[in-house]
Length: 159
Image (cartoon, rainbow, N blue to C red):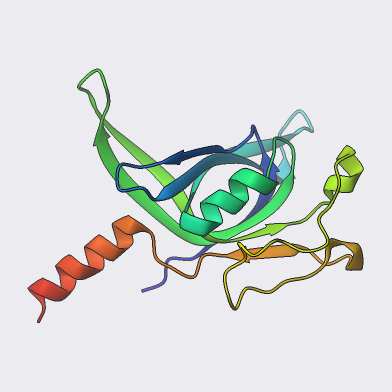
């Protein structure tokens, strides 16, 4: 089965970086993705898609991404349920990103662009210096903690 998502859009606000109870970093952010067509009034509408990144990728997204930044996210679609603080059961559908490309230059925003992404870039990730016109790419080489737990449970039940 195939579950791959590729999105290009702008961050609606700065990513929210936090550390979950087991110490793993998690970044949550929302992308505004323009639709390919215009509505009856001639305006382009956008979809607002929730995204999440884990571990090193989460730290990098928290460090290098900001509101308005154009990024591409590749990952998988995930639906999950949780209990809110008011006791209500809620469902959320989000993209769990395992790659992020920075598609615009922070130099245009008046910020300095690093020569290369520091040591935090996972081994094997495609790197390109921002000055060469290529997007910066960050990959998450490890599965999310949720995915690792699910894989362990599945392996126990199917051994």
